[in-house]
Image 1 (cartoon, rainbow, N blue to C red):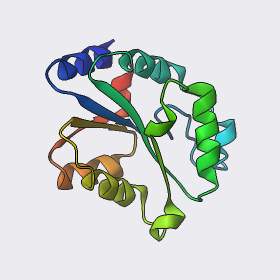
Image 2 (cartoon, rainbow, N blue to C red; image 1 turned 120 degrees about the horizontal axis):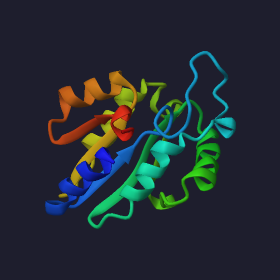
Image 3 (cartoon, rainbow, N blue to C red; image 1 turned 30 degrees about the vertical axis):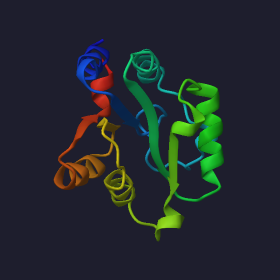
Image 4 (cartoon, rainbow, N blue to C red; image 1 turned 135 degrees about the vertical axis):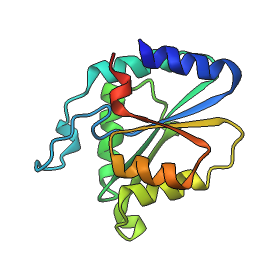
Length: 152
C-alpha cells in the first residue's frame, strides 16, 4: 500500500494531521445526480486504506468536507458513522457553504486551513483540483495529495 507507507514514513518524524475530503474520496460523487449523501456508495478501497493509516502512531485522521446546506452536515455525519466510524466525531469538520456566503469549497477549505494554529504537519487529500491548486498557491506548509494516491 503506497499511500500507507508514504504516510508511515512522514509520521516517523512528525506528528501528522491528515485531512480527508469526503465527496469523491471516500464516497462516490456522480456529476449531475442529486446530492443525496445518504445514498452515496462508500469507496471501500480508499476507506480501508485510511482505516489502516488511522492506526499509525503520530497520525490524527480528520474529515474536511463541504456541503451546500447546514442540514446536510447531519447526513454526512450519519454516513461516516455507518461507513467510516473509525474517524472520530470530534475530528469531522463539515462546513456548509450557506454559512460562508456560498463560497466555493476551495475558498472555504483554504480559509479553514489558514486558521489552524498547530505544530503538527498537515496533509490534505482531496479529489477537486480547484481545491488543491488554491491551497497549493496560498499555503506552502501543507502537503497535498489527490485522491488517486490512495489507490495502488
